[in-house]
Amino acid sequence: MANIHPSVSAPPNTVRANAYIAPARVNLLGEHTDYTGGLVLPMAIPFYTQARITPATTGGYRFSSEIYPAATREISLSDQSPRIDDWSDYPVGVLHQLQMRGIRPSAFDLHLSGNVPFAAGLSSSASVEVATAYALLATANASLPLEEVSVLCRAAENEYVGSPCGIMDQFAIAAAKAGHALLLNTRTLEYDHLPMNQGDLSGTYIVVCNSMVKHSVASGEYGVRHREVMEGQEALLKKFPTLRDLGDATLGQLEAARADMPPESFLRCRHIISDNHRVLQAREAMFAGDPRALGELMLQGHSSERDDFACSCEEIDFLVDTAAALPGCYGSRLTGGGFGGCTVNLVDRAQSAPFSKALSDAYKKAFSIDAEIYICEPVDGAALRNTGGLHA
Ligand code: GLA
Image (cartoon, rainbow, N blue to C red; front, side):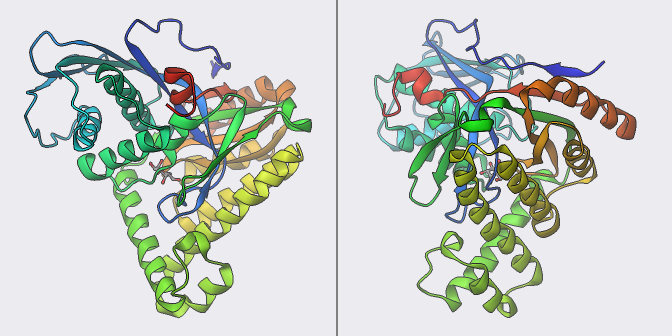
């Protein structure tokens, strides 16, 4: 039986009083570009984290989660509370960041629930961070612009949880807009909402296919890739001191600095520079309402992630190759950090059901795994949902 979920573009109907919600995200193009000032093109999709906040019953801060009922965490109002390496580090990291900005909520109970697939490359952690940030801001009677919310949620992850992620996930989850993809410059945080309904693009769905595999190398390899990229960027900036970061660099400059960096760094940087370029081309394809051109860029993006960035795996390559050969599919690629997780597919609406079935049947046959398939339309991000506006 194929596990195919049609789009749920309505908000969850169980949103309670005092609950703040944040969606998940899928990225169309621009992967691993967001920690070197590059461009990304994600959108929010209809899976949600709900952060429900009520005045405290204990006199301190209490964090609980529907998913880990046995692991409630309590900290006192003045506690520095070092990280404890479980789910609660994400919301506690956000609290610390708010406190560092002088925002000190009084005692609360925060309860997290939701349906964002876990460890699937759809940003369940950023969804928790952003939902928590809006809940804590509300209880502290404070507000911050969405740019600052995104920055502090990323800082929670970098500085408290200890993961070297970029800004894409938190920003997309905060700033996305229904019916649109978000073009973000991760250096300047300038962004634009690009319509997904121009021309023939209006006849497509975003079909997300969860491979249900996450290779154990995933978290460690992200850090390795990050270091390889930074090494390449450093060599490049030494040779071309006027560059601010990889986001400015051309393939010609990279080639000229090739001998100054390890071969892996050259390949990782080549992926990033070419993906930045693809995001700009994707923008043109979207304004032209041309799903063929957009799909072709997605396929090129996948080859680059597979060959240059080396962050794909056998199961994901199978899903991409199979999808690309199916009727109605314009493009397919690995999305998110990599080494498993999900593919994102641009598919003709009329073909999306048979496409999903054929893809999951072929995958089951090859790997004996039931993929989960989510047929999505882009939804509003947390800033629009929780504050009614894109500038809180
Ligand atoms: C993860 C990180 C993001 C980004 C992607 C790859 O999702 O959290 O910051 O680097 O991987 O594009």
